Length: 287
Image: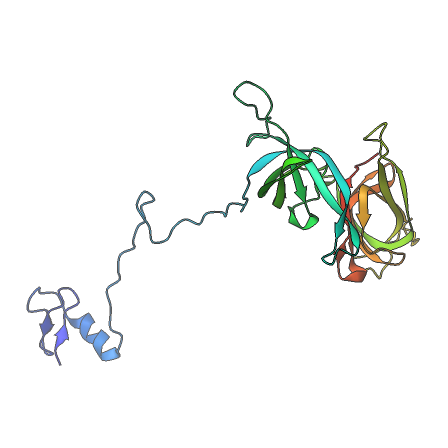
């Protein structure tokens, strides 16, 4: 059986000790063949030049998918009650529409001016809660709006928002914000005059309750070093409109900030009803 030289790949007689072409010894080759371990040349490593086109591209972080037609600051956030007539024109249904006026800005959130140095006119925006990406919007929120422009007689041009991205960092989103878990006790609701609009007949909803703190499974009550249950925390939500399921003994997660012993929040998740989040519109902040 011919023996192949590992050096020059030339065939040789099986009785030869050296390669007839290059003169290299064939002993190592004969031992490899007889043992079944055929030696194969190793390809040199392929070095990648970053400046060249590589079949292994460097992964890029995905950019946020934000389609914006307008960018600016939310002003005059409000809810308006309207009456809609059904198709048979036999009954009117009252519903709530949410609006705000957008003070347009540049990409860096600086106010936008026209060529004569005047501020660009405000844009009226109509929206629903399910088009908001991020935390609920409020007065002063920095938002990007994607939507279609319409026109009506009394309001002039306005935008129906298809998507609203909230880029603001509200007070509750600061590093001092915490999550509290526990059971609801002493839940109640009331209304009061909105201090943000002096002289106007505008009100805010206030939902308040006490939170008996528990562990993550809502079963074990948290206790102090002496074994006594921790005192229940007072929790308060202040907004133009608050809705959603909440009652005593519900198991909730509260994302908020403690000021003078009270937790102020705009985000409450009710785990007793499948993790539903309370709807908080026009959050009035911390008094």
